[in-house]
Image (cartoon, rainbow, N blue to C red):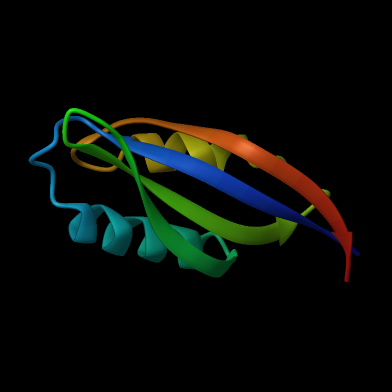
Length: 90
C-alpha cells in the first residue's frame, strides 16, 4: 500500500477566527477519516490573517477530495486547498 503525504492550507474567514478551534475541528475530522496527522502549523498571510497548515498521511488509492471538502465546511473556514501532495511507500 502506498501512502500520500498531504499538506493542506486552511484559510479562516477573518483574522478574529479562533485558530485553536479550527485546528481541533480539523483534527477530529481527519481522525474520523482515518488520516494520520503529522502536524499543524500556523502561517501568517497578511493584515493579521493567519492560515492553519495541516500535514497528514492518507491511503494513496483513495481520493482526498472528500477530506478537503470537509475541511472547507468547518465553522469560520473560508477555504481549504492542497498545497503539497507526495507519494510515499509504506
